[in-house]
Image (cartoon, rainbow, N blue to C red):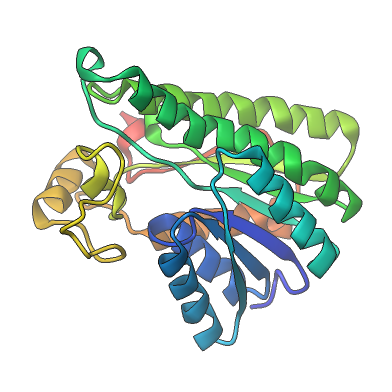
Length: 267
């Protein structure tokens, strides 16, 4: 416990799913967590969960695809907390469409959030992290960033970009000797609301209020069938991997990918 005491961390997409689980896990280990998301009700709910367990959390409205949003977030972090040690680039969307049915707007929206947001967040955070003595950046990719998935070309392209961006920036930081490590995490089938959004242009269906609940039974069954261990993962499985990567136990780990997928990539 408290292995992250005194550290300041930003988690994007922390209003639900994997991002929420990561924020809760970091706060449970003593970090002060800033939750950046476009979903204010969900972000505030994450803060309430953390505070109910005597953790420290703050919500900040953030559209990761907007550079000025990032500049404001980092400026606020520097003014209020004087440091930044952890950045988890988790916010993402997935639009499931065959290539010939995907609009250019849908393609660009995935790139803007999944990849441009990564670039903007990392660029904004690096100077303050360097001033703070170093830290850890964790970028959420996917097994879809390691292999192709039919009907998900845009998502695969963006998540493959996350993997290679991570490696390049890890080497830049290593050359700079700034004590900042950069790694990617590649989840497999995880029970989160993203599965409800696939066929709805990346948005939660308006009639479905289960923003942070288990996904539908048929989606869970499909994930179990596709996973060698016979069941889908849960957000806490990914949070555990992120917690390792931001901890001192991973001080010699940078530029690599941590695959958490129930064996999908083993075959």
